[in-house]
Image (tube, rainbow over all chains, first blue to last red; front, side):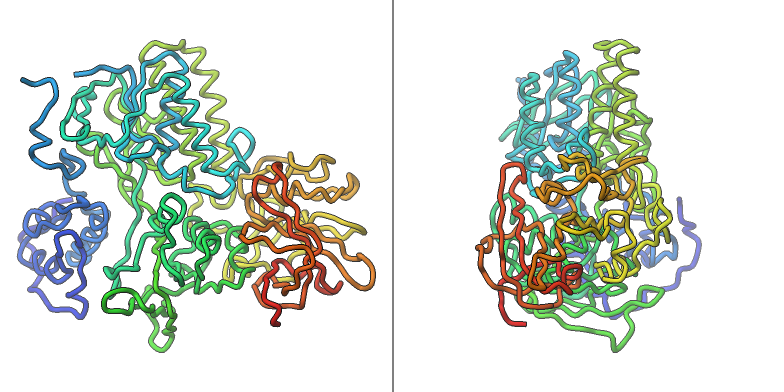
Amino acid sequence: MSVDRTRDFGGYVPAADDELVICRCEEVTKGEIRRAVRDGMFNVHEVRRFLRCGMGLCQGQTCARLVRAVVARELGVPPSALAEATGRAPARPTEMYVFANEEGLA
Amino acid sequence: MTRYDVIVVGAGPAGLSAAAEAAAAGARVAVFDENAKPGGQLFKQIHKFFGAKEHKAKIRGVNIGAELLAEAEGLGVTVFLNAPVMGLYKDREVLVRHADAVRRYKGDAVVVATGASENMLTFPGWTLPGVTGAGAAQTMMNINRVKPGHRVLMLGSGNVGLVVGFQLLQAGCELAAVVDAAPRVGGYGVHAAKLARTGVPFYLSHTVVRAEGTDRVTGVVVGQVDDTWNVIPGTEKRFDVDTICIAVGLSSSTQLLKMAGCALRDDGAGWLPVCADDGETSMARVYAAGDVSGIEEASSAMIEGRIAGAAAVRKLGFVTEEALAVRMAELESALESLRGGMFAPGRRGKIPDKTDEGLPISASLLSRGYLDDAEVDQYPGVKKTAGIRPVIECTQNIPCNPCRDACPKGCIKVEGGIVSLPVYDEKAGCAGCGLCVAACSGQSIFLVDDDTGGGAAEVTIPYEFLPLPGEGERGVALSRSGAALCPAEVVGVKQSPAYDKTALVTFRVPQEFAMKARFWRKEAVV
């Protein structure tokens, strides 16, 4: 589902639990995610690029659902309305020197 | 690039089953797993599984894992460990990490059996050391042999929370409480009853308000929730715990399917691949099996794996259409029978008022984790007869029937389908051998002899804690709710290879407690 970008969601309003860490690997808080949505990041994918949540060591294994729930709540839509972030290789965190070291290549 | 007929991602129950099935048909099969040991979650499942014989019921998960691995390797499957799959691309190309290098493989068919990961719940303090997934705690205990903590609060009353809760007790931890935001116990009643009779309280319609502590968990505050899941002020309760286990569900690990371009759908609880009945995704010859295609039990995952493996080798021409049809019929009927009962995947969240037999479902079991003493007599596994007899406190329709095959005298009947409640046929007579007690994966069968002379009765319970009590040892009999009833002396402790590590402890109580006493504890204080 694409969210209407011309719709006025109003500005960010601080909440009591804004300090709660949602993405542990990249230490992104609930408040940062909520603010990002108000600043125009209208889906999980954009929030991830903007804040790096879900791009740490666990690759979103822990926080993907949590981030989606925060974004959905902020937009006032059910979480199922938001697509998950794109899946890309490497599916597991991998050092660049390993990724580049392909067996069988000269 | 190395080619295999079938490449399986994940060496858990589904993956190993798919690999074995495909290899048995003559396919060249490789399995890749990121872990150092194969088996996925099977090797940490130290409890006996539910189901029927064909589902390996009453066998402990760890032993099923060993059998499955031996079967796959015996059939020539190559299992690559410490080999994370980094990518799944067009035309079933698989990129795998081996140590400091990556290698490309190509599978004529690929079975993705990557399982699931634990859901987390956020509350103030959720990132403190001591807050852990229940599955992670189970890995610590049963794989790495490390106690996750000393005093634990379990959040979540589904089967994962209940099973891991019991295993925490077995590992020597205290379980302060089982808490669930839902108004009813989510897992099997028999699993809940195992905890309740040891004295573990259930707090339904409760959730964690916050974890306390600065460097680690030192306590937890829970509170009752209203209809909108908000905590009702004034209902908070605090527990001294050093560990909080989170068992609030699992999410399928669909990353590889997603990057391969397989169509996904949101089933309300999470994203799942769109699959045909044989597990094939929207990408030709890419299959999904086990938890990655929908969260179920390991027993179902093993059958799904076999279905995917069988379908893949048919597509590759290793077996005929006729042979496939025969095999599929077997597998689908096995899967169908596992998916019956009141906790069936299709019925999730909808608990009926009555069993299939028309008996009331115990509200006490659903809200407190144990049967009310007054309810027990109405179930068909409970009949009052003279002499020793089994008392089968199995009151929910779940897919399980090992008790039927356990009784050498045939006095336990499970008729009209695997989910039917077991019936004690008093005409067949009970020899008191205890095989049913040990065979019951839910530990819900007891032997009772109401009159052993002098106003005493004897109760035999399944006992899976160490150290075992000794004969003559005095302790206290506990009720189904875990309340101390009366002093109780152990008069028998039986162990046998046929019991598979479940000991049978018999204790003597005054007659009035014969149908009330369901656990024994060492402390003599009442």
